[in-house]
Each structure stands twice: as structure tokens, then as C-alpha cells.
Length: 241
Ligand SMILES: C[S@@+](CC[C@H](N)C(=O)[O-])C[C@H]1O[C@@H](n2cnc3c(N)ncnc32)[C@H](O)[C@@H]1O
Image (cartoon, rainbow, N blue to C red):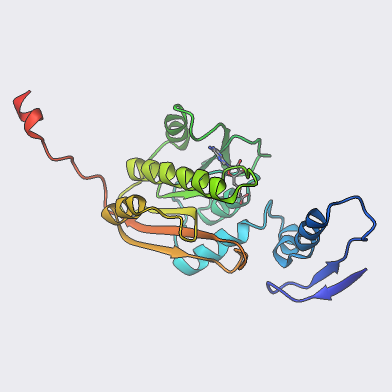
């Protein structure tokens, strides 16, 4: 039975699954919520690979991060929604690719983006990203989420670890004035990570775009205006050597 429902500015159609199907009640509830999610329905109409595309769209509409001609790294790119949004906004083309993504899952080609099928935690990943991008990025995006284990605390710790490695990468490769945007969790951001970002960026904030579900503890960390790499002060040891 399908009824129209309101949400996200698009006309959506409500789907109810029959109770006698073979799904567990929790899976049935998840599938029903997914099928009735206005962002999911809108993403199909707009040709986006994921509802996540709207999170980046909403964040960028508000914070004005992506500009034509910029170089972008997208960590955790599958199935490619953020790459689609970034490629369109920086006007990346197949002739002059400005967006490089990475995921250990395969991703169907996204025009204007090169996507590496590789684990970001692999030692070779940073070099391969930088060689493929062909210049320092203006923006490092990370929507990486560790695969769910069913144990919420473990999942959070593993995703926070990805966020920390992404932040280290951003600080070591970004152009001065560049930005870092990464998925994190409410209450999950460690002080050491916040300190690192506050030392290296002129503004650091937690944000939750409307497309991020209210019931989800997901948040995004936005660090704007990278100060540039500072030379490490010489230590006594270095002077003596
Ligand atoms: C929420 S999805 C990203 C959705 C994407 N932003 C979009 O709009 O289509 C998170 C992704 O992070 C990826 N991921 C998690 N750990 C990773 C790692 N160590 N290296 C590369 N990708 C990783 C997962 O495979 C998954 O595809």
C-alpha cells in the first residue's frame, strides 16, 4: 500500500511491507524506514548514488567549502555520492580530474573523479592519493565508517580511529587555507584530536546537517582555514648532532 508523505522538499511515496514476509521484525523496520526515507527517494530522482550526497550538499550550501578549480580528496567514497557532489561543485572533468576518492569497496566510475580501490589504512594509500591528485588538496573529506560489528562502542572506537588518521593525513597534505570535514560521533571526539585540529585550523566545529538522521549519533567535524605546516622547532639533540 503506497501513500504520499512529506519530507526533504520532495513528494515521496510511503511503502508498507507485508507482515508475512520472511524478514526479522528489526530488518523489516529498517527496510521500511529506508524505502520511506524522503532523501532516499529524492536521491533516486536526482541521480545520486547515496542519500549521504545530501549531507555534503547541505554542509557545503551552508559553509561554502567547495569552489570551482579546487582539488578534493574523498576518504571512504563508496558508493560515490560525495564524489558526485564534489566533482560537480569544483567542476572537475574527465579531462582535468580534481577529485580523488578511496574505498576498499569497488565504486562504479564517477565522471570527473578517480576512485582508488584500496584501504586508506594501507601504508601506500597517502602517496597513491597524492600522486593521483597531482597537487595539494584544498579539501579533505572523510565519510569513512568502520563496518558495524553489532557492538556499538566498538563501532564508534573504530570509526573514531579512522577520523583521527584522516585528520593526520589532512594536516600533512592540505594547502594553507584548506578545509577538513570528517564523520564523527556525538561524545566521540577525543581531546587529542580536537587539540590537533585547533592548533592547525582557524575554526573547528561540530555540525549535523538535516540529512543526518536525528536518531543517529553521527556528527561531522568541520575544521576550516588550515594554518599551513609549521616548521618543527630545532631541539637540543638536533643542535648537538
Ligand atoms: C558512509 S559510507 C560513505 C558514503 C559516501 N560518502 C557516499 O556519499 O556515497 C562509508 C564508507 O567508508 C568506507 N571505509 C571504511 N573504512 C575504510 C578504510 N579503512 N579505507 C577506505 N574506505 C573505508 C566504507 O567501505 C564505506 O564505503
